[in-house]
Length: 227
Image (cartoon, rainbow, N blue to C red; front, top):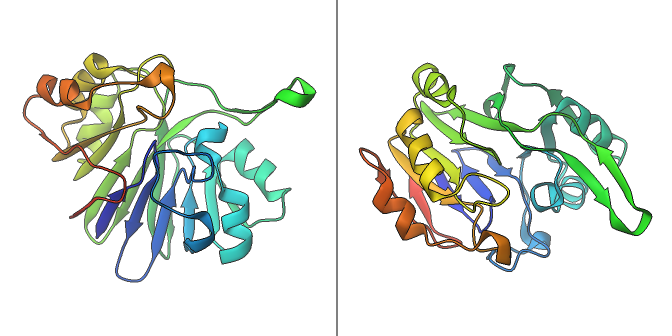
């Protein structure tokens, strides 16, 4: 399994036979190396409904035929846009042909905001994502605050790699994120969700210095790790 980072919270997983994208915010993402028109995923996994995570999902799924796996309300809303979805919810897991997916809790929000119409569309509970295939476990923590059950999640599903938000303001900052890594105890931790917008500018080096007992990899967009 090869796992790569592509700016903000975009993660790509390549198994022997499948390509999976998590939170494919490509268009409008000044930090990504990807081009939406060149991506052809087999599946898309979404943590929540904010635009900087759903991103190009509808366009990608319509073109590639990718199955979109998301929390229930978000999956239902996306199905109304003419794409194939599989609704799930926190605590639930499902075995797909591309791997096993399980949603964990996350403390955040989830909605589409139509600023021109001054309307907010609720898209259910936010989540983290555990992806398991080829004997490896990837934990995309999603957008979240620090919470104590991260320790339980780490014990139940030891992660080979965890993608952890450090941007502060909307999610954990470096200090809380480092503490979260201590609870989850993945083999490798990668900081995400920072520097994309002014309110979440951060120094990932600070996060790395605060983490103990876990290999922290600060990845540039397009860089990855063979698990």
